[in-house]
Length: 380
Image (tube, rainbow, N blue to C red):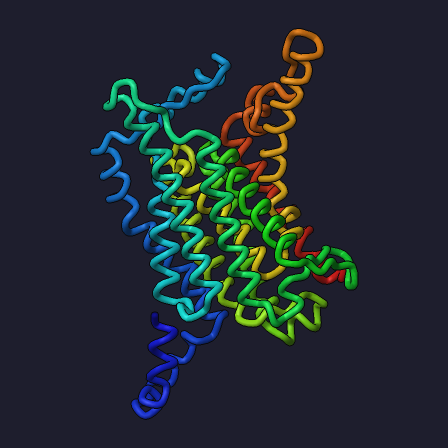
């Protein structure tokens, strides 16, 4: 909104010696302002949102299939969840104020975060209010969530492909480390890959959200990396110098990534151990889908698997655990496990790590993965 107003009233602002407001049309300033704006929105409105959730009695009720983990997590019972509404509101408000709303990538990114946030709200609300509705369902089924995620992925990837139809690099799959190794995608392959990436990361972040501050802190690290990548992708000089794809107008994705960074840091203020609020599916599904969409727009899907390697490991641990358990049960008559417990963070809790140790060490791993991934930019 501010971006469009400054552009529209450019001449008048110059005549009134208010030309300095042009900084709101510079992506670097917009991004910085989005980080600060989203952070402050969370800090200011966080206590009110948490209190509202308490009044609604929207509290977490953790339940695992192992008694010792249930005992460890018992202290979290009753902590307000569905705090993801605070994250979504901070991102959306910051983007509406600071981003170029005429940019179709921005419009689709907002659709992404609101849509997946809505799916998360529906799932959380059904689970957390089931006690009020005797005999009612416990949240959305896995199939229902997948259908909503896949449907969104197909729609967003189609319009993203169509928007950049005239520019070949917007439909090319690029590989880290290599300057010339790339694959040109047609509409069908672009939609399939993009939908899979969005669905995978939406669920991966959801699986990671199991300990105080784990998902929020890790996502903040990943979002910071994509602020830099989006700024590079949206600048013809930087992209050419670093041999990365230049995609026109994608510097505005840095504004969205900046808003994500600020929102996650602001939420972490209340979500750090001991957590006063949890994001629930409301926040985790939306954050995972949005970071995936940003990666798709700037043509860095594979880079996302490096930067967000911790999310990949968490999701892989669940898939391996479930798959191996089913295989061994069919093969040997009793199910066996690879990990002591999945997702991966609970495995380390079972190994004797405290919750704070798991979270901080995972943050450190996430930071190292992001640093290593960014180093590949120069290697190209």
